Image (cartoon, rainbow, N blue to C red):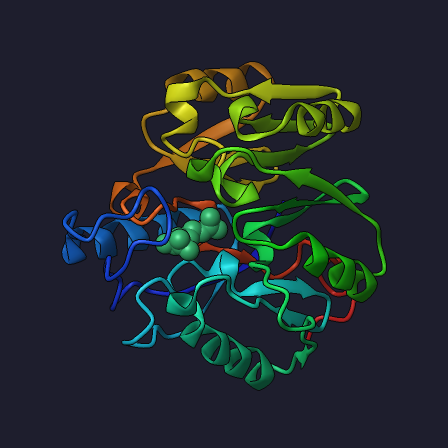
Length: 274
Ligand code: ARG
């Protein structure tokens, strides 16, 4: 649930390297199409009343448009990621500079423990869920727990195609969540089942279309286009799916949620935000 996000216009978005199973350098991004899809997504969010802050993309940081990986924002504090792969580390300083300038206190998580921000850490109700294994190190979560002052529900990821928690899990509010069962271990699935009354299993084909990589704005669920079964499941429960095409971004392994960092999700708006 969010009303304020940080996005980054994909002016330098490219597939320059391969750090997840989705990325192939031979599968070139159509820059104009990517830009149009991103602009449409931004408009949809604004139409829903979400205020969109913008950080400028650095030319040497082709994945910077995936702002969800910048870190986590808790009130007036920004906890920047320690990226797993050197290819994405140049982004760190750009995000830190933006948050300092915007008046946030920047608090780093101990190196060398890597973690990738909201890509792997998502609040739901009064709990915070954290995915680990591919991009976020278990040990980093000890430090994050201290920084956030709350115990994390830790979920081990089990399929490299779902390398971040936000690729396979979307809390919807009210004890509900979307998830891709195959992305979790048996223990992870049991853990999730113990926290949600209505855990909606997304069908395999749609989970691979990033149906879980959704952004929730009240009862609206902004998600990639072409996920009819998930859209139906949402409608049956009183949600309104809002489809936005993101296939140019799926080439890099990301969709709607990856393209927005929530500025108000960990601490409600007005409580300490600059
Ligand atoms: N190419 C990027 C990477 O592999 C995609 C990041 C997607 N972001 C996300 N929050 N799942 O790091």
